[in-house]
Length: 295
Image (cartoon, rainbow, N blue to C red; front, top):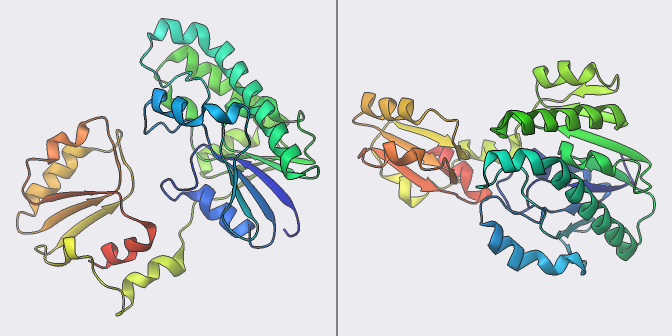
């Protein structure tokens, strides 16, 4: 695909943990104009902090060039509808209205962005079912829905989960093309849209093969650790079996268990912090990861 304009509404910021959305859009930006819409709420920070930082984008368009054909656009904060400390009973009553308000806010924001950047011929690329109501309301010539996860499974509330599942199905039916990153996701969405394609996650081979290059340095914080080094690179999410990792560390008392990535476990990594051969290093830059893998 070449010489197109793609408006990508992303669930995470460009500077966040590098995932398939950055990989895909960075490649599309080689031959197309990509306008990357960052979310107004980073779940790694408090909602109050995000509101203070991003409230101005209700009225102001902030577009920052990040390459010859890549533009990053900030968004106003949206309302939390399932990841919140509010009582579940209140959430399940307010979630439908909250999702409608969020879709309206994003539609209003995108119209200002399109006008400001002079865009009138574009492809709309969505990652989240809550923005399904955008399809057909912005004048896009094509709408793509990329299914990267079962978002409804994170709701923790049956009624909200059902609401997200209905939104997912509705978006699949209205999108012009659907991409699914797993075979299970593909089988489910293909029943709703014949133009559904299975596109499994991959790896940036050229980047990570640097771990085999003699010139790639091993970072100082792991260079002298006892061998073998058993490593993990990625987000330390709540669904990881940290008790199992603790047992792995005990099984290799003369080795080192190294975990590289932001801690999003909700405190579940506490079971590892008193194990002497476990090293929780936190997030590292993408450019540094081949060196850690080399270790």
